[in-house]
Length: 432
Ligand code: DLL
Image 1: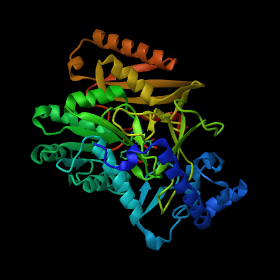
Image 2 (image 1 turned 180 degrees about the vertical axis):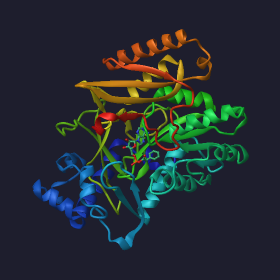
Image 3 (image 1 turned 30 degrees about the vertical axis):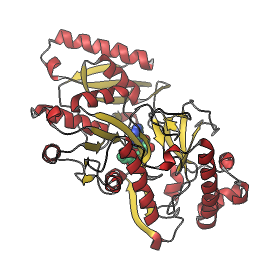
């Protein structure tokens, strides 16, 4: 269901709203955030040069390093007395990325997450289990507050304790679940192992995100949990979950563009690309108060398209993110996204959807080993049969990637499961 009028504005109404908000935001950051003023001065731009969204491309980009350089609060545009919440992303390298929220920011976050859940068919009569991590990660509290704003009965399960999660689902009659797609699959697997028929649960829909996943993985989750699986996208720097969401059409993610203006750029030249072309996704926060990022380069690779959606929303749509420019592996000079391997695997439909890529370097040559879990039925097969499947998988992956790979089928349940984001790649080259 459409939650807010802002989701159906005409293009003219949306452009006018965005332009007004952009003008105000640029003025605010110029006056209140020293690094922004410095960047704009260096580019010879003042807030008076920004008349509307047609001038957005004149503004300098913000990158993750800018957040690190101003650690922890240097990009805040409001005094700390106005900041009521602080989140941080873990970041495996360097300093944490810190984000702040005013009370109004939390309201806006709850609003965009309420839109997200509502688009997935959740209503105030539903019970929603939030199995994203609560804490510095934005997933748990983000989904929680959106669900409460919608009026649904919210179960703050957080991550972990899979048995308890399943008990809650069954005993509380949970209708909707929010978690990473990899955890959703793990839940499905555990439910099957316990001999519970998913049809006996009241689960109907789910909002899955925080990591890339494929159409094949969606089919797998929908079939095994007997639900509709919706993609949700977001990043801490912009707000957390709630930047974009799928409607019942399940054909691209509507971006909450009345709050976050998207652009797609060529990651090498910074040039803005037209609708339909893949490039790096960039967002400008036009309503956030505490830490409004301007032209923030997400490193996520996606495309956007304007047009009408059968659901009635006019919000611009983005395609499923393909991966990240910085997660992209370059193996023997070829660009490889883990999601390409995943698609090839699931297309064959012979193995469990659990895999890991191990990249190494032997001498001067990069190697890619794909570890794939056998499913239970295959486990009993002969060595010859297993080798045949390995060979089929190897050929399918090579077809997609265009480089030679080694494929190893491993025993069921040997690839480590994740309650949060799945670890798909181990790049040993970085260690040398
Ligand atoms: O993952 C926020 C979130 C929580 C989104 C729950 C959705 C659900 P970060 O930890 O800052 O925030 O990680 C953001 O995760 O730049 C993408 O690379 C990736 N990501 C998030 N959602 C998706 C998705 C949260 N649906 C980073 N598909 C982003 C693909 C996603 N990648």
